Image (cartoon, rainbow, N blue to C red):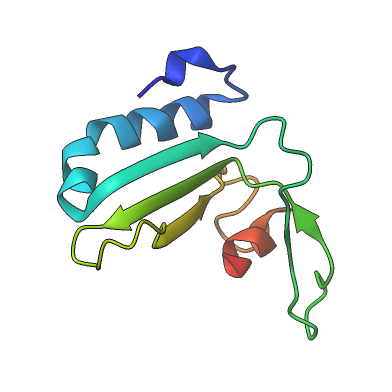
Length: 108
């Protein structure tokens, strides 16, 4: 991975990238192709809470990392078949449901 090619916003992001780096072989066992993008500078890429019954309805955020992949066990039609959103947070921001960003964890 080329995690030395972008700026780091926090130690949590560095730890996340190192976590992924240490598990590349496990990811390769599931996906024939995969990539993780650091969402840095994509102002238009935002996820919105569309749960109408919640206090956070309509709020949006820009996720830190986006994973795209093609699973090995799926037909190869050239389309990406998996996407995952990652938003590394410390306990003060999520964790016990009292953090300011805990709604993001529930949404994802």
